[in-house]
Each structure stands twice: as C-alpha cells, then as structure tokens.
Length: 417
Image (cartoon, rainbow, N blue to C red; front, side):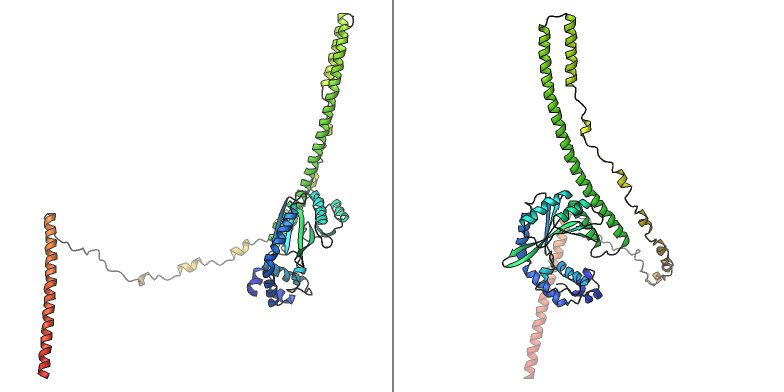
C-alpha cells in the first residue's frame, strides 16, 4: 500500500478530513492486506453471476468487476467521513462494503426492467428489498410499478436512476454479498460520465452541476424516446397486421363476387331477350366488378403520432450560466512587462579574447621529383632499407656501449680488491 501522504493526495482527501474519521492508517493497511489475500478467491463468484445474468430475459449487456483494493480503502474513508461512528475493521469490512463484487445488467428500454427484476427475484437469493434510485420528476407510472413490485423507491440527490439488488453467494461456509445494478444503456452512459466528472476532483462546482443536470434530463428524455419508439413500432406492426387481414378478407369477398358475376353472365347469355337489354346487363355487371376490385382507404388505421414540439419549449434556458463565468482577461493585463529587462543585460562580448588571425599562414610545400611510379617505389624501398640499417647499427652501438660499461665495471672491481 502506498504511503498515507501519497494516498490522500491521489484521492483528494484533505488531511484534516481524514483525521476527523478517527481511522488509524495501520488499521486501513490491515484491511488492505486482508482483502489482497482473498481477492483471487472471489473471481469464481463473479464469473458465476455473469454467466447467470446472461440467461435473464431482456438483458442487453453485462459489466462486472471486483473492487480495486485502493478504491476499497478510499470508500471506507468516504463512509467514515459521512458517519464517523461507523465501525469498519478487517473482520467486517466485506459486510459494510456491499459492492466488493459488483455487476451491472444493462437493458435497452425502461419497460425491460420488469422482466429482469422478476428473473432476479425468482432465480437468486436476494437479501432485503431492492432499492430503486430515481430522479425528481420521473414518471409516476414507473414509480407505482416499482412500489407494486415491493421495491424501496428513493430519490437520488444526483439523479442516478438504477435498481440495486443485494444477492447472497456461498464461499465455502462464508456468505459473500454481491451487488447487482440494473439500468438502461442511456442511464449507464450518463452515470459513467457524471462519475468521471464529479469524482474525485470536481465537487460543488455550480456550472458543472447545472450542465450535469441538463445531461441527466437529456438521458431521461432519450429513455422516454426509446420507450415511445418501442411502443410506436409495436403499434405500427399491430396496425399493419390489421390492415393485412382487412385486405385478405376483402380479397376473399372479391373472389366470391367475381364468381357470382361470372354465374350471372352465363345466365344472361342463356336468357332470351333483346341484345340491347343483354348489353345493358353486361355493362351493369362490369361496373359492379370494377367496384369490388377497388381497395378502400385504410389510412385511418395508422395511429396518429402526438405532437411533442411543445415539450421542447419547456426545456429551461441555461445560456445565462455561460455569461456568469467570470472574465479573467483583466488578470492577463496585470502581468508586469519584463521585456525592458532584456535590454539591460550587460554586453560581455568584449570579454571574449580575440583569436589570432592565422589566415596568412600557409602549409609548407614538398617538391616531388618528376619520376615514374617505379622510381618512387624504389626510393621508398631504399628509404626503408636505410632505416633498417640505421636501426641495426643503432642496436650494435647500444651493444658496444653495454660491453664497455661491463668492462669498466669489472676493472673497477679488481682495483677495489
């Protein structure tokens, strides 16, 4: 676990706020180490619930995670800030923090919640009443549906909408709590962005708060639109089916009438009467045939889409919030002008010594005799030979000098004796 000072800085927890919790850092280190030892044993439980929730009807997608160890400690500190009397130890932290194993079942339409709720209640061991978080002003029919299903409905201060279930799981003889949240995809998108902006660094910012409220309402409106699209699609399919059946019934009647018209035409031919009368009867039958083949107007069967344009005018105007942002441009003008300091830097160029001018000096020239390449090579060989000879003679001279020194040394030794 990282040092206390670094941890508080990382999670934006003032030292004074931490002191008020009454927590000891060693106590938190104990919880940290205890959780680190058991976290791998919780993975099979997470996998089991993920696979189980895939069987639930209307579930679009699932998100699952085991709580990060540092986030566990951060949440304990946050809970103690709100309730200093709360006792959290290494023995009971997994009972107090109920979302160590957390899953989210996401669905497309608000109406899908009921099917998922029924599956969870009938298939899993739910602890206590499910808690439904709603925003102020949500539809009364949904509130009544939640209450009818035996849920505890609460209005969330930040407008989160979701259903929370605590489910018991067995780990050997120990009971482990698992939290399952159920919400729409639109609510998931808003809550993820809201959580990223709101925690842990941006709090109590009035401008961001208002925009997050607007975003929340847009997400709620998107849910309403999605639900209405589902209703409209079902209504159109129903009317389309009704229309198809009406056409099919009319076609059957047309076939019967055409058959009868054919029979009448045959009888007319057999009846003895004036040709003009027969022609008149045939014309009448043709007109009847044309009437039976014409399709009536069934456009009234298609439902009329209500006009929601008046709802747009009811969206509050938040443009004035932008004008309330303070003008900080005046602060820029108060920055001192330090450009004149540059001109006051002394000229130290005179201190640099002047280098002599060597441009007048030229390299010595070597006159090479005009001779053939073979002569040049011969000259080089002669030079090398003379060098070897000099080296040899030098060695002989050195040897002679050594012999003379030895001779003198021996003579002196004789004299001394």
